[in-house]
Length: 143
Length: 143
DNA sequence: AGCTTGACGTCAAACGCTTGATAGTCATGA
DNA sequence: TCATGACTATCAAGCGTTTGACGTCAAGCT
Image (cartoon, rainbow over all chains, first blue to last red; front, top):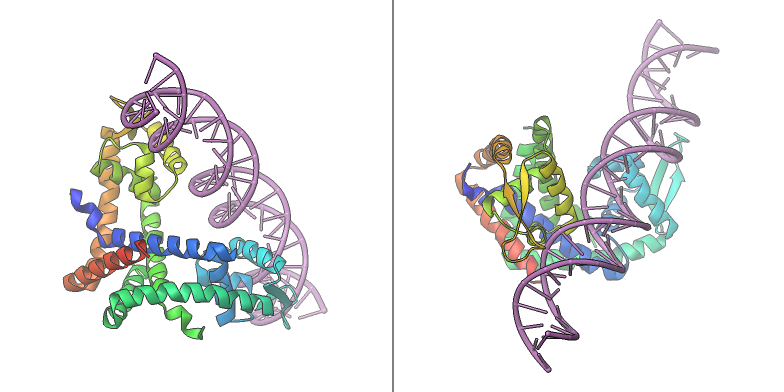
């Protein structure tokens, strides 16, 4: 099995993801927001009107996890559930003005991290990394 | 903030890591082992005699999480706690023969996934990805 | 020696997520 | 028209983890 198992691509991937996620969490904490909250907010922002279950599929989490986050963010007045025009039982998710404002502040932090990374890599390497990562995702998905 | 926030490097990183981790979990389940168990076993294998707290730092988890896993694996007879020669309160972690055997079987599965990824990328791109990811980790770590 | 500091391990409580099960709603076809 | 099926949302229970606090132990300092 080799002792060089730590030099694997998947380990480097894990370390990088962990480091990035940890940094995001640290920087977002002063804003009173967790990374998961930001993820949900920006998802709703980019595609308003989605149902909770549909959102859960896109984020690769369970519907309950989304529902839990939605309840919390709804309590803060950053998110609202609207009745679906056709399906009464389904709820569309939309951002409130407060939600948009919170998202703007949070995204400034996240974009700053992203910028720091891409500047450290350089534009060409960043593009390379992006394509390589997408290639990995695609390769793994239909394994 | 732009709607192109989904095309960020950190998102691609997250997606790739999530996909890989999910696949590992799926493939490891038939062996009755979770990905976290494998991670702990191979860590102990590569550096025997470490204390739980030290191991926790390297894996970026809390000491309690490690202790929980150790208890479980110890119950299966795959891991054993030995008394530290100098510090009586500290416990060294070592693999048992059964642990080594379980690790061998699991590593075969993991190595297969790794191979599938690197073959899909090609040797040159794999090396590139590795260096890029390490660069990201290093950049983020001292941000 | 006595005391403080730092580190390890463990207990208890709280939190978040997953799994499984239940109820409600709309679309499809007999 | 009505029954079946698919999908959504929610509740309840279980599991794993984090957080906070406590007891223990070795090393360093006064």
